Length: 573
Image (cartoon, rainbow, N blue to C red; front, side, top):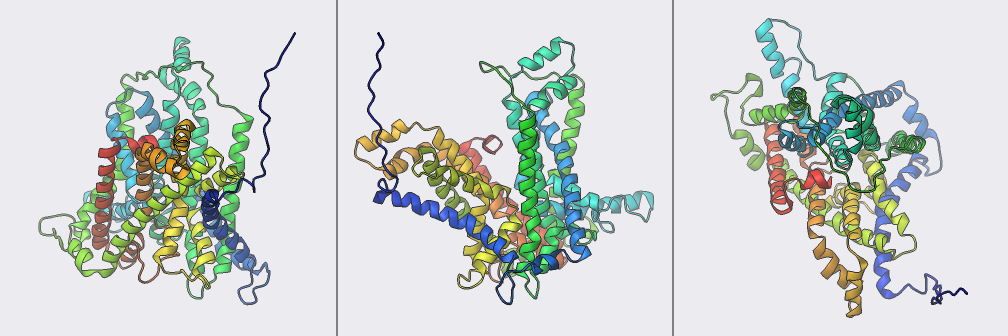
């Protein structure tokens, strides 16, 4: 005899009958997400097929965008530069990640926090530092070379393809380091031990066992590195123009000069979106064809690899990388900031505080730019975290039938190049009837969208860690979901959300690729003013203003480290 336990029948309630007044808030927030992300991208695509004079459909914009040889050259140069940058970022980031997480290399904490400095320092400031170091005529390295050898030829020339690749790579390998470090820390040592028992040395074990297991993280970081490299604006603006090596982002700025050719710029930016989609598909294909999985029934111990005498060789390599990325450019920037003329070298006679006095009290654009950048960073981080928390709550608690779509939308800006996003926002909101061009509002909206994936990832992981029963207890006592969010979810996630806030504030306060097309005459940000000072040849004042921005960012991060722990960014990134 068999029996079954009767279960209450599930009554299907149509979604429109579940649409109570309280749920209108979730729909409103979902609508904000759609407007922030879909509207600019849709307007961008439509603009690329729109005739600027008649408003009708046309392919003339594409013909003008790709009808000249130099436009095609800029596109091919961008792809070459992006590929070279990816190789260099992997050569920098992967060995350092392995050294800091899996080996007994000395100075691992020093290397970790030095690499973190590459995240804090804006790429364009690193570019200025390398111009001071390796400019062909007045760079300090070449001046020392001339003095020692008498040679008229420079030893190094930053205004070249290799210089462009180097500066772009050192400004972004932090992402590779963080993603691959996280993957290394999740791998058990059991298979490595098995390889050692069979006679494999530490380096052979790393190449045959360890690195294949973190290949998904390496591939993912390579993809993001490529997308970041081809969309970066600051470094090409400083280096590629003097190097006579045109790239896409520089060509896009020409379309935005007088007369404005927005539709042509939209058409010219389409390949960046197509390349992004193609690379995402390629990543999925590679990982689907070959699996990289470690099967283990319990958490394994992660033992440190003993390198013997090679640990000092590895430390020397790590020290070289962090010197190229942080120590050398930061050192010369500080020297230039306190110099009357950076070309004469540093001496007591050349020492001055006048550069800081100028940018703080005399140069009105610098004053407004500092306030604007910090204000935009605070606003973008705050709004992005609040919006992402609500969206993550909707997704994790499945409050709307299309919550999966919301998750996709919240993450999608991560793979949209910042400069393409800026053009989309310009097309959607800069012109009448909205007419937000030149306002802080349009930049804030663009920054919020740009960094929303970071906020959503942080918030989603936090909401997922909170069991719904805690919220149900609030509802049993008569509270609603908003009460649960305010008194349960929010307080429990305050450290997580604070970490996410800082991860957004740092890049938002120094953002350039998105801001370059959206700033107005009275709404300058530090990154744009730094480029203006560079074009005017005021590198000493540029170094002073950049140093002030770094001091503010470091102060905010120091407060975060005191509250959240010293390694919160290395763990949460």
